[in-house]
Amino acid sequence: MVQKAKTIPQEYIRTLGRRKSATAVARLVKAKGTVTVNGKSIQDYFHITELQRLIEEPLRVANLAGSVQVVITTKGGGPRGQAEACRLAIARAVVKVDPLQVTAIRAKGLLTRDAREKERKKFGLKKARRAPQWGKR
Image (cartoon, rainbow, N blue to C red; front, top):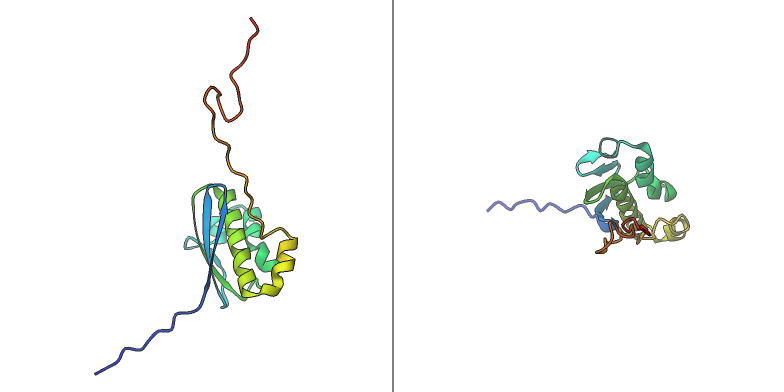
């Protein structure tokens, strides 16, 4: 009887990041590679260079820019929220890979989850806080 060769799954670290209504799941593998978001390179997915730099910031702080491959799946929110969710997910993954980097990454504020959310609209108002115009007469 012929036995099938067992494929050993490559070990990866999976982390989650959130910002506003965006969610990002990052899978970090110790291999030469790049950062891909939803199957595309970050240059193709995020056209604004500021957002591209934002995502790669945790890797630059930890000096892991070319030595790890990051695969990100993101959904919800807009480009900025998705980019910041990706940054948080990557920062958490880097800390799991190298716990000695936690002080440098925390000093840059990359491990802090931005808790600001959209305030809900209240009845009797036009928006969350915008009241209808008030007239004295």
